[in-house]
Amino acid sequence: MNTKIKIYQVDAFTNNLFSGNPAAVCLLDNWLPDRVMQSIALENNLSETAFLIKKKDKFFLRWFTPKVEIDLCGHATLASAHIIYSELQYKSDYIKFYIKSGDVLTVNRNDNLLTMNFPAYEPKIVEHSLEELYDAFGVKPTLFLYCKYGLVVFNNEEEIIKIVPNLNVIGKLPYDGIIVTAPGENVDFVSRFFAPKLGIPEDPVTGGAHCELIPYWSKRLNKQNMIAKQLSKRGGVIHCSYLGDRVTIGGEAITYMHGELLIGNKK
Image (cartoon, rainbow, N blue to C red; front, side, top):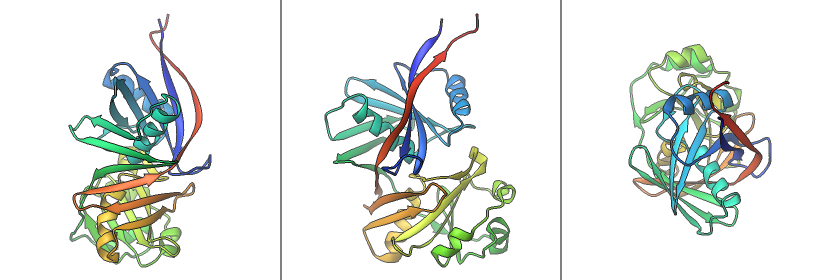
């Protein structure tokens, strides 16, 4: 007998369809076996699939890429909050997500803007061959830092736009993902994110990467509140604030489709 699971696809960090970062959100009563959730994420073939359980007023959340379970995902959290409000008719403007690591993530609603409160990742300058990074991106960077991801700093927005990533070289670097960033022309800073090791050649808009970008740019620009843009083909706008050991990451979201998964054994 098939188990029916409600699934939604949401474009996050945008209010327009076919832009921002698409994520799938699956509503569960209880956790499925890890191998099944991993198979669903692979079948969806999106950068992340979120699995969401509601128990009374508590929400439990996990995220899978097509290859692995990950410990944090911004745009799929934003997508999950959007579904809680649009489909579950949740009334409070404040959501708590309990996640596998034991941390608690919060989302606040202010009209259409959903703002997530995430841990801050403080990047530090590390020694790495800038020539090797040139081989990865075709443009020579000015600085390399690391915390959760590699953070490669360039001179200007035009250099970020021109990057043609060599995913084979990036995949051999000792980092789960690589962020490239520069000052923005019409926003405070811009970025792109590549994570071939996680099954994500280029992520359209990456909330988790901004946990590392926000502390760096806040200190460099001496600003607490900033607007950022991710320069993937789909693109997205991120509202950012630096709070010391936490950051806030805000954006809008829109539902693209909904349906049912039929999970069960073949007859």
